[in-house]
Amino acid sequence: MVNWDSVRDDFPILSERRNGKPIVYFDNACLSLKPKLVIDAMNDYYLKYTACHGRSIHKFATETTEAYEKARQSIARLLNARANEIIYMRNTTEGINLVAQGLDWKAGDEVLTLDIEHNSNLLPWQRLARERGVVHKIVKTNSDGSFNMENFSDALSERTKLVSFVHTSNVFATTIPAADIAKKAHKAGALFMLDAAQSAPHFAIDVKNLDCDFLAFSGHKLYGPTGTGVLYGKADLLNNLNRLIVGGETVENSTYTTEEVAKPPAKFEAGLQNYAGAIGLGAAASYLMKLGMKNIEARDQQLIKRLMEAVKLDKLKVMSSLTPSDPVVSFNIEGMPAHEVAIMLDEVANIFVRSGRHCVHSWFNANGMHSSVRASLAFYNSESEIELFSETLKKIIELA
Image 1: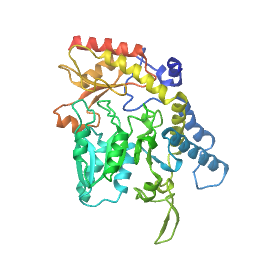
Image 2 (image 1 turned 120 degrees about the vertical axis):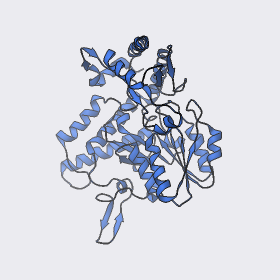
Image 3 (image 1 turned 90 degrees about the horizontal axis):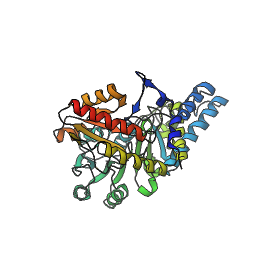
Image 4 (image 1 turned 30 degrees about the vertical axis):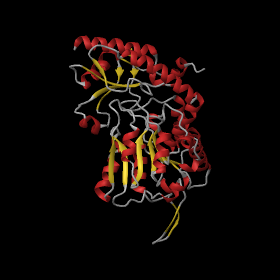
């Protein structure tokens, strides 16, 4: 059993205070806090062996390469993938853009996304539609953001080249049946990609069982450094995927007119990389595996139950699913702008949430909604914090 109270000690920032009171960090769907071992792993690179990977042959460079590739192996284990299927990216957005620009598209090819996609899994396909004549089709979800298999089946056709869906919604906290979708997409001859930015921190992800062709996630949500992320791709697909950026490290050899392209993952990791960030992300993956993703899932279920009870208040309307798959709730208070609620939570009780359209502007615009408040938790949050959240909401509602 994991002692979750002790786990809080792994995150030094949780001891911070503002105006003499502790902080309550409920903005994890935007960015998670970092355990000390992640920070230490990054500092070790800068303080003990900072150098280039894959270029020089001195001791610092050798240690850098060893740490960089060890981190890749840790991330691969987290996903049940092979190390050569893990590409270092800056974030989920870059991973999706690599696939969007790397596949060979013809005018009339179709790509399917959901109506609740983050801009990172919407704008790359709009760009393809404008520039290459790709047909971008939107698959509608149910009113609570849950997946509608019938709508998906109707949208799927023999011209569908790629199905690219968000795994867990950052607004509704709903999770799609990815393995079933993959099977249906593949039967139609389409590839399947998952935006796992929100699911990777909360679920045990097995890319083999999911049978996704590509999967992208961000380090900053996975208790790792900002400016880091991963694109997983099946090895044969990565071999044929075009590069997004070319330059140093992406080739084995070159002349004034030719190049010998390197094999994945080097093929896609152009230029000097964020070595400290990659090493920190590997440390985060190892940390999560030590805690156990199944234990984290069980912890999430405890927090979800208490969180949904906390928002059962008069004049508070819950937008997200009433049975969320991770501890995220989006809501509005009758008669109060979302930003005002977020500011009051901060000023009254140091409770940090997010307000706005959460980079899902398209859904909010389509449904005539301006914004919402979003509270999103992680395993280091506590039930006492949830109680404070509920009591503070009651005070705000009284003021409203």
